[in-house]
Image 1: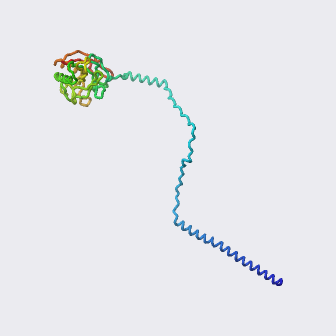
Image 2: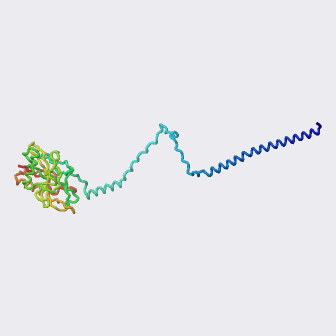
Image 3: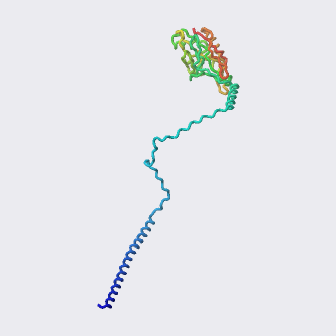
Length: 317
């Protein structure tokens, strides 16, 4: 092969190689673009489907997680707490304020009087008939009082003003029957429409009242009329060992009003005491005189009305 033919052959070979390389390069580019196009198409389809079926996302804020116990640091042992603050003491009262307060306290006492001591249910008087309680006591055990317009701003207490001695009875029941019979014969039978439930103290023992009927007291007239009435307490064994002792509170009353309330109005303690003594003596009892009971009150806030502090003593026959 001559030089010319060799050159021609060599040129054709180069051209052939160039065309083959170009074809190979074009196929590679086509293969590289084809998957990309298909992927984009598939991705677009998937994205479109996802948008068509997806729910709107919530805009609520995300809640903070509570730290678990393991994350919380335990207090260190041995760490001292702050000392408590001392309680501040109150400021001293100025001398001027104290002087003014004292002045008005003294003025109040001079106008109204200082607070008075009140009698107590346990007060007794020592007598030949035993330790006799000074007061008629209410069902509650406190002193019995009588609201009265005659003594405004005062408490009218009801004193023991009669002592009855039964020297012959051997039982309390026998003595009670004897007492009721003696008072009935003297014109003081048990009468209705009188308050009941009262008590008397003898020798440190509380005794209930006679008569024992509902709403009854010994009285010498109908409850609508002025009457002397009373309750009797016992029977306490006599100090000598024979017989029994009774105490009583008698008072005179009349029908009236306590302001606007219908009631029995207090009249007198002494007149009722003297009336029952006279009635019992007239029917056979013995007058043993008077005993100083030391139970007269005439104070700024307490009173016993016209009571003179003495009890009559009567012995049943």
